Image: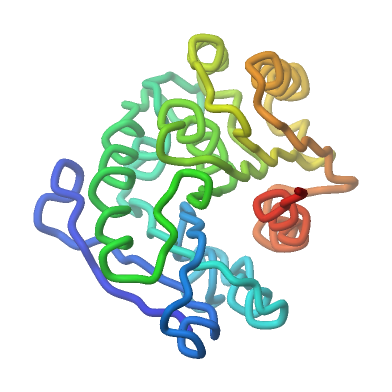
Amino acid sequence: MVETWYTPIPRLTGRKGRKVYVYLPDACMEDPEARFPVLYMFDGHNVFFDEDATYGKSWGMKEYMDATQTPLIIVAVDCNHRRNNGRLSEYSPFSFHDDFFGDVRGRGRLFMNWLAYSLKPMIDEHYPTIPDREATFIAGSSMGGLMTIYAVTAYNDVFGRGAALSPSVWVSPDRLDSLIERTDFHPGTVLYMDYGSREMQNHGEMLRHYMRIANALMRRGVWLNSRIVPNGDHCEACWEEQIPFLMQTLLYERE
């Protein structure tokens, strides 16, 4: 079951609401006493339903979760759809300049402060969650992938695991690398990170940037599961195919 509702992000939207999708596994109804890990996701409009997706193709996450009966709550927040780089601004931790997009003001910290310290407490209050950081995950693709790395790093007290698909690490790689190097990660921090082999050409020196960030994360003790997806592209259809890999990483446990 997927519930939808709207809530404002005061410092970003004023009183205007932002759409939130909440996936609840069948086990929520079957066992009222059960509690579940929570996965927060960026670009909520692209997560569950094709009719809501920007290009008419979603990740199909509901179908995967229902078919596998994965005991996990998913909270997916819609992005900023405004023109003039609204999404890029909210999904970038750093201000940057790009020849195509121009000057982009990074408001990722504002967005993450709201998600970690306003939305998460709301979700924990109203849904049967396990609120501990070890059971609190975050995931996204492209700029949402960049924000996932940022969240697991700068908000490591909140998010214990993450999945960054095709992360836009070409945005201010020096500042991202510096942030990772300064972070004292909690032991057992886990990150899944991948990039499609066919999308490497989309940005100059992308492989070098990807390897640099992956190496920085491992140097700081993050348990990293990194993949180059064979013939992988920058699209929802390809990211949907990676769901089993990221889910295995997020939920993997071995005593």
